[in-house]
Image (cartoon, rainbow, N blue to C red; front, top):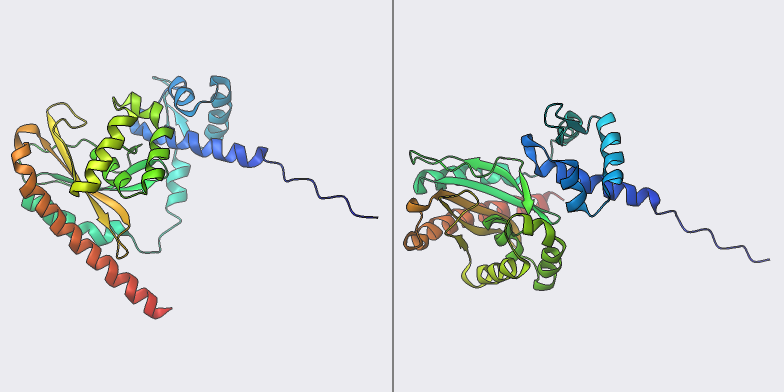
Length: 269
């Protein structure tokens, strides 16, 4: 007698893991100020009771904590401790540090390094320049939906057009909260592909401007984005060309160093 086919693996467990991680990412986006339960529900597409159940478990595991005064949720200590378990590997942040510092010194403005994580851009480094007033528009560790900032535009521009379009559509509701539409974001990404940079005369913070260039590896793939934020009168459109040239110069040096390290690793294998 033929054996009956094995039952399909249940998907409830995998779905729960994905939902929990999605909620963690949304909570992380709130940084120290935290996020409201209703915001997480809206952005995740889950019902408030479902989100509350997940948050309750995550709080029990200290992956999420709740501010007793504001009732907002933020990332807990367990996530930080888990991150400390990984100390090896090549860090693009470590490689880029001296070049980011050189760019900040030359341009005078605040310089940021961001990488893509799923449908988000995450800031992993920040260097202050010499201008008297520095624009600290984003903290290290902060994440935003791709396209909500110049860094996200530069990262989107490095993806195949179809993938960039799908990611932007997925982020539509979150982008709307940041004052961006899917059409605006995709147009900016296309312009970045053409010109090699993206410029926002009105940055994330009022009265500021921002500029970003993609950071590529030896194969030409975009592995990060270098951005600059400054007071609007310190980074007007007429200064973009010179600033972009400085940014590309340092980005090229980072890419060269990345290539050297990858070649050395290949030889040791």
